[in-house]
Amino acid sequence: MSVKETNDPKIIAFCCNWCTYTGADLAGLNRSHYPENVHIVRVPCSGRVNPQFILRAFRNGCDGVMVCGCHPGDCHYSTGNYFTRRRFTLMKRLLEYNGIDPGRFHARWISGSEAGKFRDTAEEVTAMVRKLGPNTRYREYARREMSADE
Amino acid sequence: MNDNLAKMREAAKRALESGDVGYVIGWGATKFPDKTSPLFMRKPEDAERLVWNEYAIPGIAKYLLDDLYPDKPIGVFVRGCDSRAINRMMKDNRIKRENLRLLGIPCDGKDDERCTICRNRNPLVYDELLWDEAPTPEPKDRYFRANAVEAMSADGRYAYWSEVFDQCIRCYACRNICPACNCKECYVDMTATGFQGKQHSRSDNLIFGVTRAFHVGDRCIECGECERVCPMGLPIMGQTQKILKDINELVGDYESGVDAESENYLGVFDLDDKDEFM
Image (cartoon, rainbow over all chains, first blue to last red; front, top):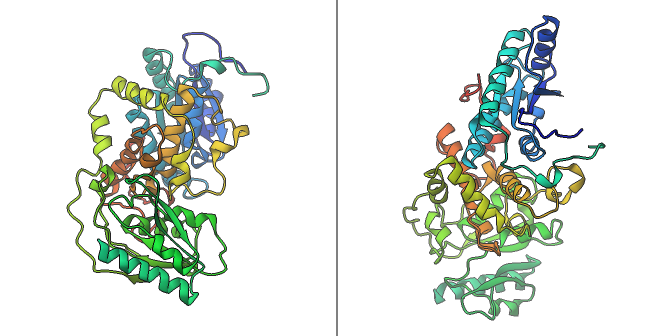
């Protein structure tokens, strides 16, 4: 996979398998359209998302990152998203503190039936990141073209 | 001061002569008059080399991780910060209380910037106290580095941390000395995971800085050892102080290492946590 040199934003969305991924699937079944800039990475639970994933995404050329999971109380594993909430409340503030624009990192609760919310969030985040322009912070220029096996 | 040093030498000598402990960790002189180094006393006569003065600053608790299965308990002199470090490592299941013989020494504060934010001069865990406790003076601004950086603009903060971490040589001394950074294996040594490269670049250095802070974050005992050992003299406490400041804003008074039982902020959750995500 290579990161193309374009001004069009590239956004990674870490989606929980049980809620947001299903919601995105439902958005597709409903034939609703969301921007192709959002690239979904399926994770078993939003609690699986390591804050280092976000740093690595910025490092390897993403302009925005979303972390989406079940609403609090709805976690398939009972408690996963409560840990997510604590972790990313801190991480969002730490990223802001380090000069990353708050518009580049989003955490959202999207359930399996909220296809519309997924589409709206994807559109909203894409518009926001497009306005901010390409991300230069934390970006590793030497590795802009990643090799095929990565 | 000399009185206290005599008591410390006496205590170390007594412990070593009785054979209760394998060795005692304290502070020894170096060739520089204003520096001390960790001292490992194995024989009773070694106690004469012990030093206790305003330069006995280095944290000595992390050396316990180099000897996880000792034949006999290890004697350690503990100030407030060392006792919090020991609590930290006991909570993380890295050392066992029965392997320790803690000689408590209430600290009188050292001539160092990080001692101005000290909240516990008296040891919080010890087997015997060598002299009387004294109250800890009111600490100065607990988040002095974080507050200074927060006052800047977003671009200014990025420029500030870029300037700081451009100087970082990634020697990982901050990781090696930190009592909270006590994993058996560290992600910075595992290059195949791809989180971070080995090269010296701004992005990798910044990512190391943020990741180190987040890994330590809620478990930081605010001893400031990371800044003391940094060969480039970088103000890296600014990152951990920010996390602690946020935790204190979110859940009220939070301090790590004051005992070996209370849970870490990121290790538990509360149903009523603040929900900023929609």
